[in-house]
Length: 192
Image 1 (spheres, rainbow, N blue to C red):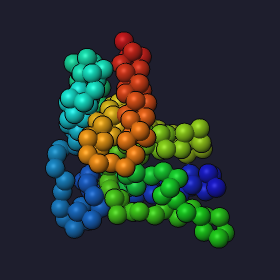
Image 2: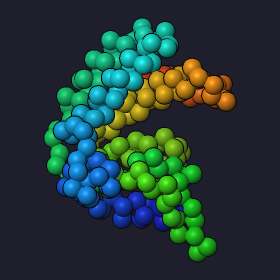
Image 3: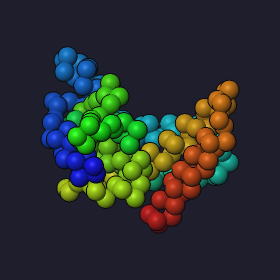
Image 4: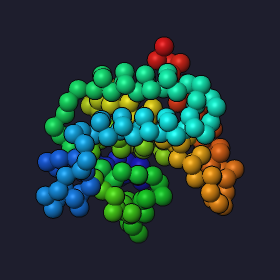
């Protein structure tokens, strides 16, 4: 099943678009906000740092260092004019198997043209030890580093924001935030 999933991903990622953004917008001649994928990710990561810092003392203590690292990682990313078709939130829960064992993607309303590295950072998180079967060659390491830190800090701020309301399972959200804060802070230590 994982080999077939890797083949499906290769097919998906072989399609490109003229600009980044949601397929429905781009294919109808529109464009997304921003000049590049990495700009969108960088801006989102900086917002997530501010949100996390407002809710978590350890994030507040590391805010400046996190922001500096995000800027440093973004500066390493070279311009790119290729935008790959990606699912955007692909995990095992977004794949069904047909009766003959072929994977079929579901929840595809978020399909977008973006950097394939964004998809691979998410795939690594969602598929964990099974990710190696999905790993692709030729990925841009600078983009992977930026997108990985951005994802982890977003998974701190998002859950902490959710539990400020009446979210039904705050303990699980706190666990997600705690794990991802640890991951984000460890990325700072490994960059030093």
